[in-house]
Amino acid sequence: MSDTPADLLRRWVLAQADDQAEWVSQSLETISKGGPEKDLHVFLGLAPRRLGKADLELSDADLKAADAAHPGWTPAGWSIDGAARVLALLNSAGNRAFSDRFKDLRRTADMAELIALYRGLPLYPDPETLGFEVGEGLRSNIKAVFEAIAHQNPYARDHFDEHRWNHMILKALFVDSQLSPIIGLEERANPELARILVDYAQERWAAGRPVTDELWISVRPFRNDPEIKPQLDQAIADGHLTEETLQ
Image (cartoon, rainbow, N blue to C red):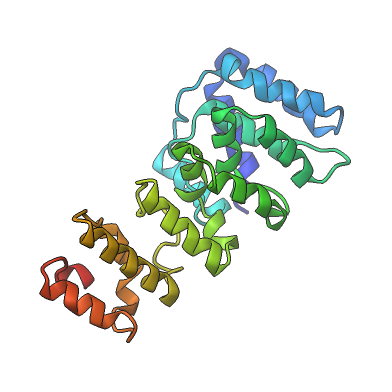
C-alpha cells in the first residue's frame, strides 16, 4: 500500500525540521485530537518562524511517491513551512466541517498562507465543498495566489466543470501566466475553449500583440472544427500562424 499524502508530507517536513521536529510532532498530535481551533491557528502562524521558508528537498522518488499517493499531485517547489501548514490541515479534527475551517483560514490568511492553502486543495477532504473558496482564489489579483490553484495542481482538472475550466485558462492568459504548468491542459481541452482561444488570438493579432504558442495546446484537437477552421486558415495565410504550430 502506498503512503498517503499526509504520510509523505510528515516524513518530508520532519526530515528537514532539524531541532524543530519534536515541536512539529507534538503540535500535530494536539491538532489531531480535535481541541480548540486556536491550536491549528497557532501552528500555522509559527510554522515559517520555527521551520524557515526553504524549499522542500525532494528526490525523484519522492515526486513519484506523491503522484502515486494522489495522481497529478506535484509538490515540487513547495516550501517546508507551506508543506507543514497543509500537513496541519490534513491532521486537523473538530466538530466543524472542513470547508468552514478552510473558509475562515482563507479570510485571515496572508499571501504566503493563501498560497499554501490553495496548493493543498487536491489533498483535502470533501474537495467538492470548497468550490466557492476556490473561486475567490481564482479571482485574486495576486498572480502567485492564482497560480497556486492553476499551476501544478490537479484540483482544477479533477473538479472544475467546463465553464470554470475555460474561465481559468482565459484568466491565465490575461494575467500573463504560463499555460503549460496547468495539469490537464490537454485532456480538458474542449471545443468551446478552442473557439474562445481563437477569438482571443485574433484580438491580439489585430492589436499587433503576440500570442503565446502554449495557447494552441487546447486548440489543436479541434483545428478542423467548422467554427474555427476558416479563422485558422486565414491566420496562416496572413502569416500569424504556421501549420507546424497546429500539429
